[in-house]
Length: 95
Image (tube, rainbow, N blue to C red):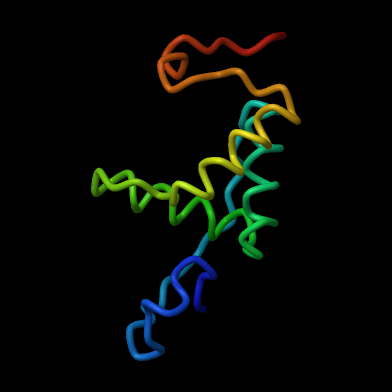
């Protein structure tokens, strides 16, 4: 499967087949809304978006272009997402 942000840089012979598994992951509600909006913007499913983000992070590379980051800021504003990376180790679930 070709992912939309890679079209033009990835040739069919470069496709890597993988085995995917279904998982139940809990995410902060507003964060999930922003992720779904970005996936929709990129015409991708949420799983493909998350795989791309994680693979980029594992290599210390940015996952998004400057234009996509602008769109993400807009989505964050729309959905009221104020969390920052520095908050990641401080989050506690509201019971």
